[in-house]
Image 1 (tube, rainbow, N blue to C red):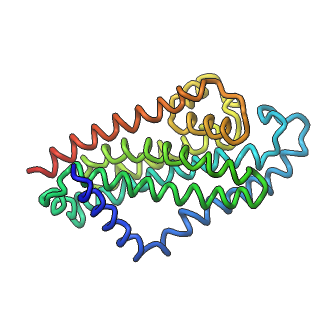
Image 2 (tube, rainbow, N blue to C red):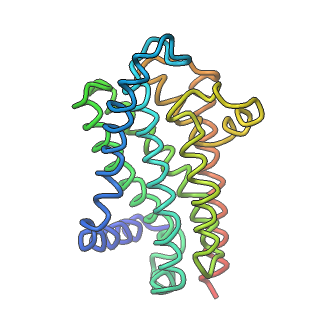
Image 3 (cartoon, rainbow, N blue to C red):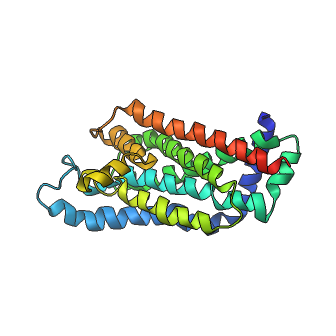
Length: 259
């Protein structure tokens, strides 16, 4: 993998995004911010009136919600980057075949893909964090601390998702992953409420998801929130997903494209 080749891939993705960014701006940036306002301030005002809301440790609901929703949005962004752009490059436009036939190679293609995906996730995290800070949900300093966690969960999603997409020839499987994987994880991994409110068996499932680890880590960093595990275990779990996902993606890309 040559560094200039990686940067060429990042540059190509940036140029392509510059042409279409307006179409994705609402779903990537505006929708999460509106969610925070509606859920955090609207629903949150009702939650805060309730006596002894369990699991919030004295926090307002918008403060409880903001870090979790930030990393949940980063997770969604990572899933998006690892799905339809990959199947487009692999099958629809076949640009990946041209790239691996050049000096860039498979490693450069994947390296550039992951770097660009990380940059996209960073943009989502920073913009969402700025909105949360403007609402007083978290401090501006916390936004800087949360951005790396957003990148971590984004890459922990995009790497396995890229590996999964590498073997797909249609979008049915991707749609199923979003419907039965990404959406339930978004809702039930602790971003909106403590998972202690779930049945025991569903709590056990939630703790296996990457988003739960990111949510726990984000609240610990931003709010000093107590977590069930030490921070290094949350980080280690996410890094493991990145490494395993990237290795699988490389193997599958090489098998499919170098033919």
